[in-house]
Length: 474
Image (tube, rainbow, N blue to C red; front, side, top):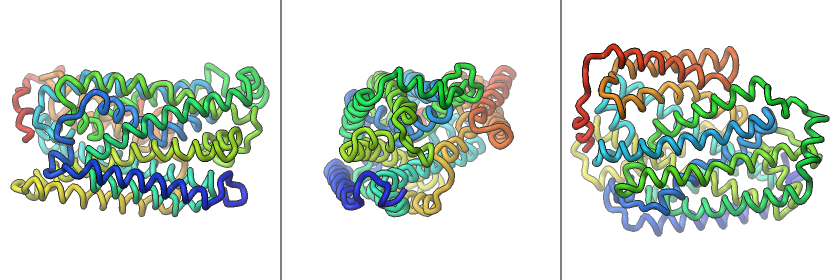
């Protein structure tokens, strides 16, 4: 995509980018003004209420991958592919009771790493840290890529420049404002995203009917309507388990469980899941309409922006820019904050400087956020594959952590042997299937292998964990 074929002139794209960049940075400075300690910076004082809690759960999960990858799923896998992406909402639904359990067992906890270290020991914790950091960086890379792809597709701004600016803006306001700024901006971003998706959906229906879309698919790509499309069916289960694994292990969600007021977490995550559920369906429907609208799609992960731009012209290009920019920012900031807190708490505080002051820990978290941004930028300079191939490469690692987390929270018989073996065997089997078969089965296989090992070890274990030990997170 270049300036000649883009819908928006580059100067309009740069103007929009500048306006929203200034807004988010300004809000980050405003909301971060009260952060005095690491707890303020990392957990917003552990005082987040229901409205902000629900909004940040939904906005964080409405990633750029949702608004761009869900259409790609629909274009490549059809109706089942579109519905497959909605299964990720079960991650939020099922994490709701887990958030209540986490807050009860670890009232002074900071990170998911705190849980793994206290529950399974340093050996299992080391493997967990490698897996969760790899996933977090993969997620960051996929979102930074999406930002560059968006600007290039809509305004002709070169991929590298667009990716660099969006990532830099998110790093700046996250460094300054911490989780309070992340949650505050998430609230605004979630409202913009929901309104934008609704407007775009009605605009597409105003230009082409459901019957026309169905007829076009039946004539040109009948496989997309096949309810027995094998890859699409496997994608449903793969995406369901990938979504569970993403939420269950990642510190993005654990930090929110620790940050919300007592009694809020369960309700907030359940409401966030309900808000998120219809978004992938709306985004996927847009992609299925591309053929009936005669929209040329040079790359599958560009289909969403291109269809909207075709239907609404320059206004549509501006609308989709705003929606995807907000979804991108709401997830990048969350991941930057949560990953920097994980490294600050679990590595710097626990291993390097146990006696570090709260102010020093806050400063370290800010510098770690900057380092994460620079690393992500360097990896994204050469665009690597599609969003799906980048993100789902981490699927086997994510799936292998589901059962160690769940059994560790609820079963006293869960043990380190099961956790270590479940992660290593599950991830290994899943990666083999990723390359031998495809991404759409990797997480399923990893989760199944991990489950068998973890449950077998728990069944044979004679030890019983003392839940009081999890209260030692501080």
